[in-house]
Image 1 (cartoon, rainbow, N blue to C red):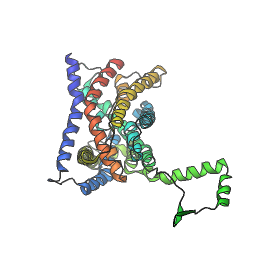
Image 2 (image 1 turned 180 degrees about the vertical axis):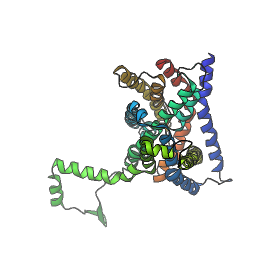
Image 3 (image 1 turned 60 degrees about the vertical axis):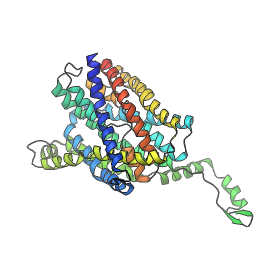
Image 4 (image 1 turned 135 degrees about the vertical axis):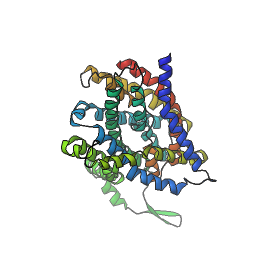
Length: 388
């Protein structure tokens, strides 16, 4: 009973911290205070996108990942991708059942697909390592390897968010019903395409139609986000961490260019509070004018906190049975935890960037992080029992 109480306190700490900072952001966005108005949030979002997030990803990953550790953790990028794919599928089911407005479909799928693989595990895993008599062995080694696992998880999550989820949300959120344009003349409508041309279009082959659909989809997808700042930072960090001469030059206490790593770490530490303040600021707008259905919020909660963790248990334990991953309890625990975290806070930045569902995103994040105190207590308890 005492272990369960300690686990509850440890698991609830990061959630309570986020809710407290969200409250500060909410207060700063009030009309009487107006320190975090709409324009200020947009500026802060750009700073997070171009400066804070890349610094956080780069500094954590470069410091923790080596060639040997990366070979041992090869399954983690696959596992993170599976969380996004399965979450997308569950999000689409939520859309089919709850039938939200078209501009919110991308938001719902994004909330189900993208989990908080950064600051939540980054706080939970080291805290669990400090527990006496825990299932992860020596606290010092647990801390060392645990941070490495979380850093790679955070980096891969950032890559998938800004490539897969960002473009998926754009495509689903911008899909108006296409109508045939026409010119109105008095009470008559004269179509711009003649009947002969229309007959010719009907004779277009199926392959040509497929090509037209692919071109239309490519126009909607913003391919530039594949090389978003966070993605570039992850690539640079992998180069620094994997190439030994460069690593010795930058990483470590006695490194000649260690000031670069220290500076990136210092700047990156501002990413989490900045993103959380933005969520609190957007929440005020959401409470005033949110068109979010209760059924959609419940659907996201069920998808993220029930079906996604269950699928994670099946996938991770199946991978262990087929010898795809090692028997190390901490590594398996981090893989399982990736399925039980709340939605990524970067979703608030994404909705702010292309202006669709900002207030609704804050409402979903509020409820999901409120219920995360339960999810991140129950599921980690079961995960530790499973891998111990």
